[in-house]
Amino acid sequence: MRNAASSAPPAPSRATASERPSGGEKEPGGEGRGGGGKGRLQRLIGWQGFTVDVPEDWDLTGFSGTDESGYLRIDDGAEQGLEVKWATAPKKMKTPPDVTVRRESYFRALRQTARKKRIDLETKEVDAPRPVLRPDRAAAGFTWTGDRKAIGAVWYCQTCRRTVIAQVLGARSGKGGLSGIAAEVLGTLRCHNDDAEWRTWALYDLVTEVPAEYKLVSQQLMNVYLRLQFAKGTARLTVEQWSLASMARRDSYLDVWLQANSRGDVREARFMTDEGETHGHPALKLVGGPALGRPMVTVAREALSLRRPATRFGAVAWECEPGNKIYALQLMRPARVRDVVSEVAERTRCHTPDEAGKKKTT
Ligand SMILES: [Zn+2]
Ligand SMILES: [Zn+2]
Image (cartoon, rainbow, N blue to C red):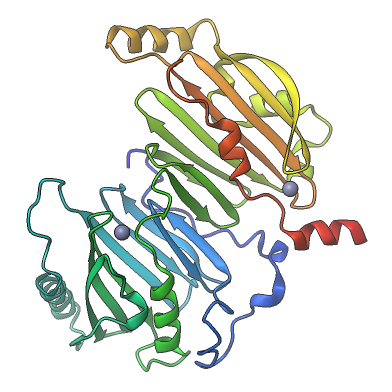
């Protein structure tokens, strides 16, 4: 990923923790099995085609790479967490990767690191945890104990052609119900979406879906502001979420506020505004194109490079009072590219029923 802040995101935002439903307090011990598993996994994380349900106090804390190959870390900021590494097999590859060979090379890399750090390491080949097994996956399991304990699996998925190494980490002693959590979390880890056309992106308190053909090109992950920017050819799609919206916006009009605060294409667009509704909130709809001046230079450059220039601008923005957030979705696209702004808006999760209820009683 290109932008400087990308592979080392700031410590995950806890600023909005008070807005989260309070039912998901961390449970002591390893109980809770047999309850279907969903009970304590209340947070959805979605990144580069992966989705996983994790405990409420876990969140995205590290990532690198692309949808082709990359790394993802989700943890509680202390002891327990999930790590995922993936690589995509080329389409023309005839024989699928051997997961036991992958497991062995992973063990080798672990041993090397352990030697350097002078840590005693014990690796063990085991059957893949049952919840990981799927008809389209070849899977092998492992555990290792070093400075921490890990329970994981290596699998190859025929559907998305990803080889995945996924492990849940915890205390060396395995306390904190590590094996139970590991089975539950690994069991919900999906390496591709059932609907191949859309991808879920979920982190901190943002949950949205974006057409799969749009690739993440940059992001900004801050306490009160999240931005994911995607591209497909010359089309640029920006998803933004501001928390503490009422403080941020005060009395200014949403379109004026957006032009001042957004990092999307709205700053360099000319547009007409219209009113609509999204998730029951009054919404601002913008339709237009690049503004005259500098953006036209971009258009001209794109045209000269024989790529279809992005000449259509569209956006939807709304303030969610119960969730105290502002959402903005923007798309600058060539005329031939489908306008997906309102679809993405519909697929962006707004307030929870909890928040709506709170609002009514106060
Ligand atoms: Zn898959
Ligand atoms: Zn809302």
